[in-house]
Amino acid sequence: MGGVSGIYDDPWAYELACSFRDVSADVDVLLAWCAEHQVKPASMLELAAGPAEHAREFARRGVAATALDLNPAMCAYAVKEAERGGVDVTVVQDDMTRFDLDRRFDLVVTMLDSTSHLLTLDAFVAHLRCAAAHLSPGGLYVVEMAHPRDRLTDEPSVGTGWTVERDGVHATVRWGESGDRLDPVTQVADDHVTMTITADGATRVLRDVVPYRFWTATELDAAIRLAGGLETVARYGDFGAGEAAVALTDPAAWRMITILRGA
Image 1 (cartoon, rainbow, N blue to C red):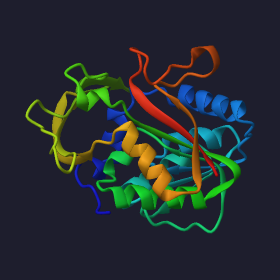
Image 2 (cartoon, rainbow, N blue to C red; image 1 turned 180 degrees about the horizontal axis):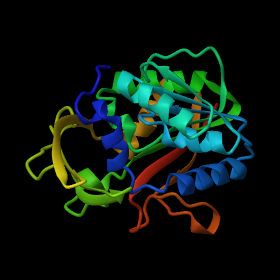
Image 3 (cartoon, rainbow, N blue to C red; image 1 turned 90 degrees about the vertical axis):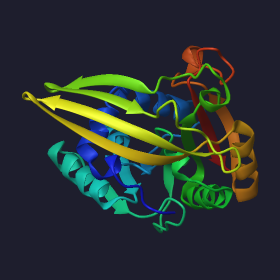
């Protein structure tokens, strides 16, 4: 799997772009799902972790956290931010399709649709096999992906543009333009990304083109069967547990989140 350049080489900007997410609330729900499936994670692994925000939050809560990413800039930033936050996170630079950490984890997560960087079925199957090999007995793998309606309908769950503000910095983000078409054979689109950052009266613009593979729910199920070693135990359309759980088929669903257990 090749590296992705551009916005992923500017971890601070990438983290800012994704700051609309409430990472603490995400982790609350991830832990609630673990409890529902009788898992009390003492260790966790975040794959394609980028700035490792979720791994850092787990570490803050006393879970032994490891973060893996292919991009060296992201890894260096994750190390720096963990140190700055006073938490202990093991950061590993490696490929999510062929890593071998020689240990197992109670919980493995891939967040923010990072599986869209797996551009072929072979890559996805290899990734799932690696994840399965790193799960403790009874452990869970949680995969957050885009909702299929984002690419299959004219009424996507999420918009391609948003604004964020943090620490006096304002940014507008466009992730995908109207002309970014999905290749009907490969199901890959070259998403054009534009991020405009304003701080202290100065503005800079970051532009990138990010290859994005769209995966349907049935393709994900097929990849899971081909990989072996994993079984689906739940699927949700948002981060919510118990009475707040959102079905994938719910009109309010905006993500495709699959919980897998080692078979």
